[in-house]
Image 1: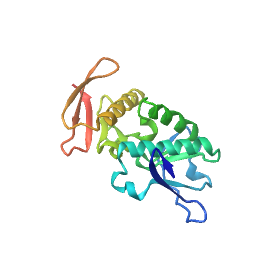
Image 2: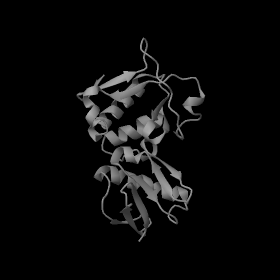
Image 3: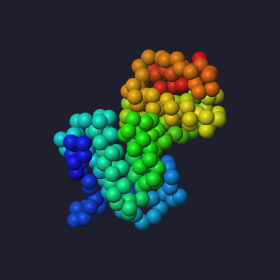
Image 4: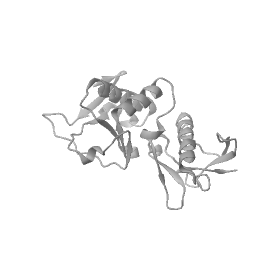
Length: 196
């Protein structure tokens, strides 16, 4: 399939082999997990000529734009599975947040990434490393109020995707006016957010 001058493969259609249904841990705008129902999976991937740039932002934007167009065209498509964040995303929500992003709005942090509580009480992103090579980790006590921490996390994910991650500490101001610091972890795999 051709979209924005780039070629993508759609796997799982007859007479070809079917695709296995990926496991998901996060759900957005779905009453029931797609894996719990008897649905068939299709797999949309960058074409072979894009193999070296498969994670590049322009390629991913074109892939997501194509997925959005398929959702709009085929009423039988019920959800999009985004494997990097282990997310199942309902068709209306996917169409809404991806259209906004592709038209210059915020990155769809709830869907193309997700958040989970860690054993030590932090709130950590899932799937952000696909986009920037780092995960976001909001440290306690900032993570205590999960709703507020998730709101902060979605704003920071948007910013991190725009800048491509961080390699040095940065001071920021939270929506409530408090001063925070973002620091890369020693191994560079996490961006840690804590009070200054």
